[in-house]
Image 1 (tube, rainbow, N blue to C red):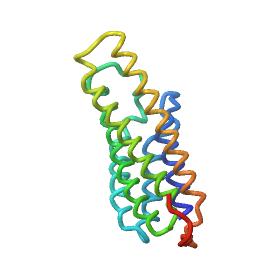
Image 2 (cartoon, rainbow, N blue to C red):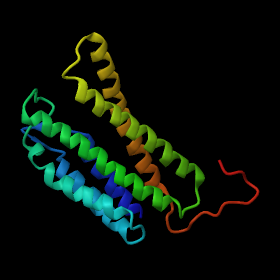
Image 3 (spheres, one colour):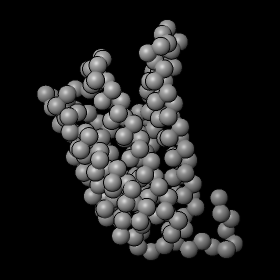
Length: 189
């Protein structure tokens, strides 16, 4: 399991960061492939990871053109729609990853980690959903206030991606082989 989370961690690093020198050096297809491998390792013990595996496979296929185009510099046309589609697909993949993690963490017996996964899930999905809404309506609304709101949520998306990386690192450091039993006398928080 630790290897699966290590692969997912590095895969998300590739998806999160973009280093553009003609081509994207941290190519998204490589990131999706690493997530695919990590989810594949999880499917033996947790069947819910199969959906994340399929989402990562589709991510491999659809992210290939983004390697050759600097998507941060596109200002209109089909490339903008493509960039938005990649953003949405990243959120869909993470949604299925959370499903796999939630099913995996049920067997472990750590309520704090379960709570952390749930809180991160709610905030991650909420902020990314608001960003999708803002992007959808940004063409029809202008002004400095709108730009400030858009900038704020852009920074929140980045912050949530970093929080997700920290969560994956925490899941990676867990001992998945020996489940922790909860003490009857200790309150579960």
